[in-house]
Amino acid sequence: MIQVTNVKILDMIKKIETLFILFMISSCSYEGNLTKQEPITVDTVNNSLIKEPEATIKESIPIPEEPEMVKFEGDSGVLRGLFLGAEFGDYAHVSVLDTLGRFASFYVLSYHIDDDLWDAMMEGKYKDKQVEVSWKRENIFIEPIQVYNNEEVLTNLKFIE
Image (cartoon, rainbow, N blue to C red; front, side, top):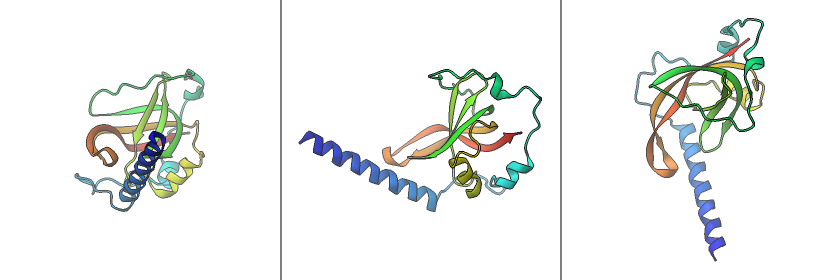
């Protein structure tokens, strides 16, 4: 009986998460000034590639088996490292390994990244590419658990050539 109840609870959680994802995709709201915020597109990324010296970040980043998490300080910042991937589970987020070999994950709100760029990142076309992520701490409503959390949200992303 306990197993059946746990399966039902897991199914209910999955349904809630699916509804949340659909809600976020269809009607993401943001309290702030979006008039100055342009979506990041594939063209934006290609046109804003940063030229890097011969020694690449990838060659200099130690990649531990179990990296520690980046401890973010302040309300915003910029992090450079290797792009590990983009995922869409409970939430859309990107993962980066910083220059010290620490793991960082950033929430991605729908207005920050163009669909074509997001699809390319999800397909792994930018995996292990050098990246610079601008982020800010934002109070986000987490639908499945009905609470607000301060989370690191991606505000800009540049792949480094």
